[in-house]
Length: 64
Image 1 (cartoon, rainbow, N blue to C red):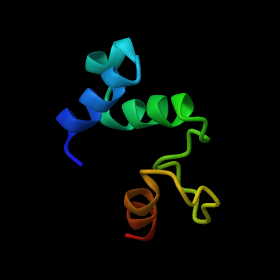
Image 2 (cartoon, rainbow, N blue to C red; image 1 turned 90 degrees about the horizontal axis):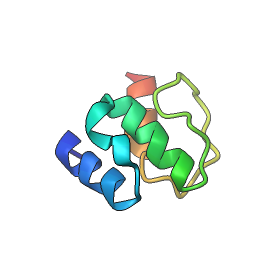
Image 3 (cartoon, helix red, strand yellow; image 1 turned 180 degrees about the vertical axis):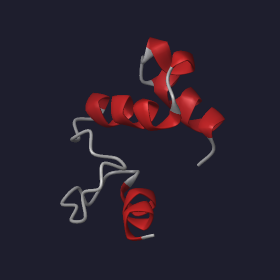
Image 4 (cartoon, helix red, strand yellow; image 1 turned 90 degrees about the vertical axis):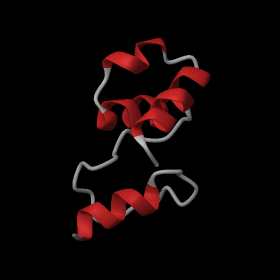
């Protein structure tokens, strides 16, 4: 997903600082708003959040 799409998603969720955050911080804010732990790209190798939108992208980055 491109950064501009992530920013639009964040804004749609009411995250008003969406245009002032880096992409990873933006995803953390979205995770928090959606009730998930803010774990994107924190190096966590096992993920129990099976319905998190960022799961595949995050685990791909951890394994690379």
